Image (cartoon, rainbow, N blue to C red; front, side):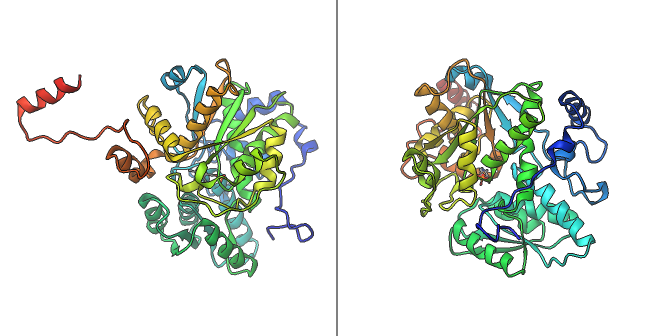
Length: 418
Ligand SMILES: *Cc1c(COP(=O)(O)O)cnc(C)c1O
C-alpha cells in the first residue's frame, strides 16, 4: 500500500518521538559522532549510523548497505569568494556508491524488502521508474542483496553511464518511448496490481533514508544550522526528506531553528516554480520540456503536496534556471575545482540568482546539495566543451588543442595561452 485509501495522499513514517526523547539531545549528538564513518557494521553508513531515527527494528544481518552517506561537505572557497558569499558549501552527495544521493534512500528500501521477504512476503521484483539515478541505485542494492530488479527508463533521455549501471548489475532494463512521467504511470500500475514492489520515492522508506542528509549537514558543521539549503528538485521527494530530517532534529532538541530552503528547478521542467510564483497551493502537472538536467525532467511531481508543506515550514523559495544559466554555473564551478552534474548546476545557478536579487546575503552560510556525480554526465560536459549545446552560448568552453608531436608547436601553444 503506497497511498491512503481515503484521501489518496502519500504515506509517511511516524516515529515515536516520546521514545526517542529517552535520550537527550547531547546524548544523540555523542552517539552519532561516535559512529560517524567508523568501520563497525553498519554504523559507518551515514544512514545506519542514525538507525534509531530511520528504521529502528531492522537487524544488522538484514541491512543492505554500501556505506552510503558520510560524503564530503565541500567548502567551495574560491567559487564562494567569486560569488561574494564566502560561506558557500556544497554537499557532495554524488560521491557515493552509485554516484547519487539516491543511495541514501535505497539502502533503507532494499533492507526492508529483504526483511519482509524473510517474514514471508512474496516479491517477484523490486521496480522503479527513473530518470537514471534511482534505477542505478536500485540495481546496485538489489544486486548486493541478490534480489531481482526491474527498471523503467524514458528511452534516450538518460546518460550512457546511467543506462549502463543497471545493465551491469543484471536488472531487467525497459526503455520506454515516453518521458519519466509516462514510466511512472506504468510502474504505479504494476505496483497496484501486485506485480512488483515499488521503489520510487512515493514509497516512504526512501524518504527515511534520504532525510539523514539534513542531519549529516548539521553534524558536519559541528551541529550548527546553515542559513540556507539549495536543492535541485524534480519529483520533490528529496525536498520533503530534507525537511523531515530538520524537523526530527528540532523535535528532539538537537537544533533550535530551521535553515531556509531554496528549491531549484530547471526552467524547462518547472511545475513547482509555476505554482509557487503564482501563489497557488496546488501544483498543476505539465509536460516537461527537454533539459540538460535530465534527472529533474519531471512534469508531474508525485511529492508536490508535501514539498509545498516543506517550503512553508522552512520559509522557502522556489527559483528556476535556464539551460544557459545552468551551463554557465557549471562552467564557473568547474573552473574552481568542482565537477558539477547538470542538476547541481541548476542549484548553483539558482544560488547565483538568489544572491543577485538579495534574497541570500553575503554573510549567509549556504549549502548547495550536489545530487549526483559529474562523472555520470560526460555527454553534458563534452557537448559544452565542444560548443555543441543547442541554443546555448558556450563561450566558457575549453576545447582540447590537437597538435602533431612537435616540440616547437607545443611551446607555441603554451605561450599563446599563458
Ligand atoms: C533524483 C534526482 C534529483 C531530484 O530529486 P527529487 O527527489 O526527485 O526531487 C535531482 N538530481 C539528481 C541528480 C537526481 O538523481
